Image (cartoon, rainbow, N blue to C red):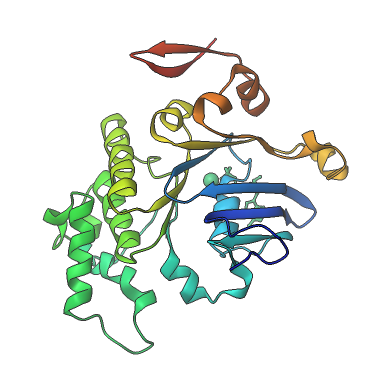
Length: 280
Ligand SMILES: Nc1ncnc2c1ncn2[C@@H]1O[C@H](COP(=O)(O)OP(=O)(O)O)[C@@H](O)[C@H]1O
Ligand SMILES: [Mg+2]
């Protein structure tokens, strides 16, 4: 099998080719070319408004790009149906709200939807898969608790379990730690890393904290916000694109790249053999 329009072998994982995204007259993403490799934990990192959420939505087919194509395991996503994509990609949007007191298990069961035919009810096998997903994230004890009565950290686990109940090959998480305290941030990121390896799920997530990104990612894509005047001359110069660097954390997270992304100076320190960024 070959990728459409290329002579090379299929590249497993997610490939974006020349992705640009405009909201009205505003260009948010410009010529994003990435290969997010299968089996890895990949973090999209960058300042507020640089387009992380938008890129995640383009990757999972929720948002059609203004230009360019996305390939998942060599398949052009524009030619795939919503259900086919949903079976392949579990998506955890930021800040899930839910006002009806469904139990945690009911919420996770809705993750089975892409596997059910139109009018089918979830069966015993679906319930088992939902329970297994809760167990994977260490939240089986919450199964019968109303979602409205559990903590923010617990909700995040349940929502991740819902995406896992889809049995996706790719797990897309938008700021999975944003509403969590210090301890829960680290435990959710460790859990995501463990599941990625144990279940052979490719993780593509967005994070706010560069140090978390360095600690918990196999690869980082560092983005910056396009400035309005750059949008006018888009495509002319390579440095007008918004991917600053992508690759191994130590290659991407250099003081120079961080300055380009965030406009601040940092020093890279080594602690217990791990690198951290220290703002100056
Ligand atoms: N539906 C929309 N309509 C218009 N502008 C949008 C829309 N969604 C996002 N934007 C703008 O696009 C830019 C990138 O947004 P987003 O992808 O949410 O960035 P991030 O997740 O990195 O904070 C922001 O300036 C935001 O205001
Ligand atoms: Mg966002």
